[in-house]
Image (cartoon, rainbow, N blue to C red):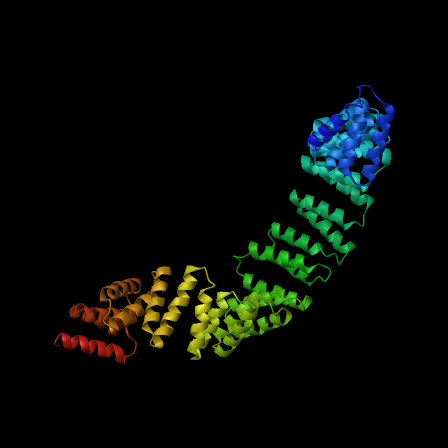
Amino acid sequence: MGSTILSFAQTMQSEYDGKPDKKKNATYFSNGLQCKYRDDTDGAIRNFEQALRYMPDDAASMFELSEQYYDAGRIEDAFRMIENAARLEPENKWYQLRLGLFYRNLEQYDDLIELYEGLTAKYPDDLDMLTELIDVYLITNDFDKALAKIDLLEDQMGPSEIITEQRLSIYNHKGDTKKLMAELEKLIKENPESTRYHSMLAQVYAENGKNKEALREYEKIKEISPDDPYIHVSLLEFYDKTGDSEKAFNELLAAIRNKNLDLNTKGSIYDYWMQHHADGKQINEQARQCGEAFVETHPDSKLGYLILGSYYIINENATKAKEIYQKSLAIDSTDFYSWQNLIISESRLNENENVRDHAVKALQYYPMQPVFYWYVGVASAVLDINDDAIAYLEKGRRYTTDKLQMANFDAFLGDLYHEQGDEEKAFDAYERTLRNDPDNVLVLNNYAYYLAVKNQDLDKALEMSTKAIAAEPDNPTYLDTHAWVLYMRGDYKEAEKHMKKALKLLKEPDETYTKHYEAILRKLKK
């Protein structure tokens, strides 16, 4: 833009002899206004600049240029222009007000205060200017001066809630509790039916240890407006802070049951309660009561069902949990936690066909969630649909980024491949498992045993079985595996020692253990 103006100015040089020319100034000024009204910012700037060339002290052109520069994003130029205009015509209120806007935006509050002090002195009846000055004093935390101006404003326009609330804000910032209480009491006297002011006063009383007075105000709110949606929230906070948990919880239930209180607020105060009372002895029972209150008051919302379902999951009532999550899904068939916990409940009930069917349905909504592939795979394996189990587990493992979760997929796949006789894939799966979870004792044991049976990689098998019995030294299965690895390596005495221990730990006789022991004894010629 700068180079364009310079070029244009150079073409005009022959016309301009350096002397003011009101006629040309007026022509360019008029053209500038026409461009402005057509939203032609570039054209307006060119014409107002030319108007200013022919009258360099034309404050009106400066004022207009300031606006156009601002619209073009040339903030510094805009500020410079309005400063010059205001300096040239200090009596022009509009120039001063525009300069004030720049001072505010640039946070030049000292300049802004000086400007508005001058304006309010010059225009004492302009209450908007006085209000602006009060606002600046509030921004700069000059509360005493703000109060003085508020008193002046009240003298001119009479008492008002806005003025009183400004005083309240100042007293609150200054920590002047006595004046804050007095102002609120004055407000209540003037507006006795306003529950808002009773609530504010109650909060101030509570914060200053005047619990009896605070409770009196809360009771007054109940008397004025029995269905007030927020009174129970206020009382919940009050009783909770004063240590009366029983009354606080009763107010929580009352808030949930209040049909005038919005569901989001209810959800927030429920979360608040659960977070601050998570260690309480009664928290599970309280969760149940809240869940039932939500279902009773908001039967079309899934929130209450999710709370109740979680309660029954925690308390291992899978039958009831299943029923609750089915109701939740009837309201919102896309809810992730409802699907997940429904499937968990059915899994605990050994309803493997339901687990499989519902996990497949859940995948329609969450095709990249590995947990549902896991449940389809496990249920399919239990139902002897191993091809499906492998297909779902292989797909699910590709969607997980968690190492332990991936290890679980691979461990299960290893067992399934081994069952199908595909030992190469089984061993690959076990290798992947141990890369992600080196201490997985079940895989350490199984992999070691299968290697021993094949008489393959016995050093590796010994290392894995040793690690397994170190983790669980009294597990007869792991001891049997370790004994058999030792047997295959020809270390019969050590094998006998571990086999004897395994047999002692067995609760019931086992044919495989007996055969292993017999084989070891034969080698020892016993």
